[in-house]
Image (tube, rainbow, N blue to C red; front, side, top):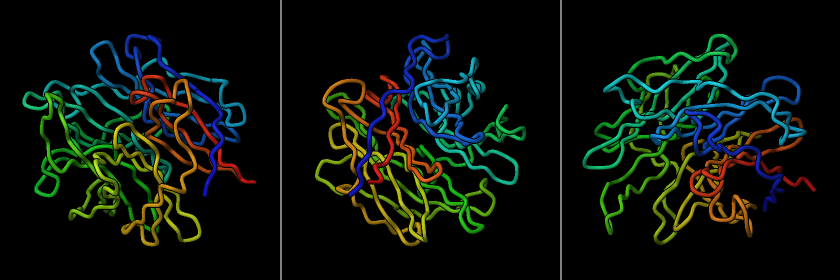
Length: 304
């Protein structure tokens, strides 16, 4: 069983700017140099529209912010576009000198509150700027995923691009509350842009009344794929699974070794985790209460 040592809250949006009024959610990291990392996250403006920001930290002193983005990394889309009402970063792949940023595009709905699609932005200058690959999504609803798609995690593995994304099985209202139970699906690509999917479920529901299995974080070590993700029965918790081929997974949530705190910013829920290696240590970024309204923090894996 793993044991994660919580190192505390790193960042919380508190009306820092017009575009960063609340929330710091879905954190993920990009290695800059030495001990320095850029952490991407999503915040919301006064209209509740999400945009992507970043902070730079020294992983040995994660509470000391070295730099913070003053403007959004990606702008909200044009009128009528799939990301007209928000963009949320979800995954980044470094490939042949470029950075591929996969993100969630938001549309406000009428019969349902919102609809998600998946977009791509690419940086050719080392991450200083990102340009949207297209005004349209690279993955959207279709006959396999009829409602919406979201929260992509993409890895490049042995000349194959693998995407793990979420997709609801249905949409409905219960006690005037919108519900869209979702699990983690799988897709493949030869170029990271055009994706093939056939309805493969990577992580499905395991518990009674479980209704959400969210964004994955994946590391491949010694031929074993290891995945951390969010799941919810009432409030979000972090789960863990393993796979030999990256397609068929076995849930081992009891081994994850991290849960909510007794009080404070992560006492109600923990979700949107991102696990990465630095030197001989593993670190986990994760969002706190209310989808990151209380901010995001960091933990490291106890190696003793």
